[in-house]
Image (cartoon, rainbow, N blue to C red):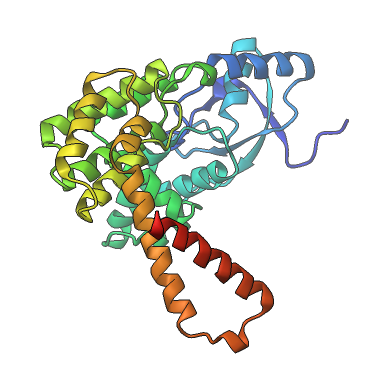
Length: 314
């Protein structure tokens, strides 16, 4: 097979990592799988690099292939050389490549997003808007917000994320999303004075431990804490009832957020939803007249009337 005209070869020793690459974690199992493929078939997709003004070649795309080539002792790898980008262009290109990947970890990506934001400020003299930052990073606004929320996590939780990312994916018990959901739920309780600042931290640690041992299995289960806080805000349940369940969440390793929700506000929330639905129905029905209703609608309303009569007369 002929080599395309724009593809060259270079020694892996003449190539170095890109300091702006958001991908900082390279799991051993995944590298071994790629290494086996390269050993059997060679590098089928050339690395994309640029020739640095400081000397040598810098990777734009293909660091895993480069790592495997070095480990296999390959003397030559195929490369495509691009013009040297500015630092801003380099960061933008790294994010554009990231946008096409599904296996890059969010925490190091968030760190590089912060770098991109700082660089924009240095060059433009102003902080980028959320929309501008999303465009620069080839991300959606929602993804930008999520990455910024990651950076707002306490330092001790960022350390947990770093430790988890070193493990094979199959062995990870905690993700960024677990920690984001835990901190949001605890913050909602704090806002309604259902926990104090110290209790908030203790609750977060307890929930993280429950995820680790498998007492909690649904990543989004801590969202129920926010619904408990809203029920207290609406005065659907007394604050003392929720506080008691929060204390049990902290003390009982097997007591789940769903258990706490069921014991406190689930019934009240169902009644609140029924109340709101009933008011919407009254508003809709009050504008109608029987003459304009179809037989099917009349049948439904009669069934609803009979059901309500049975409930109200019981």
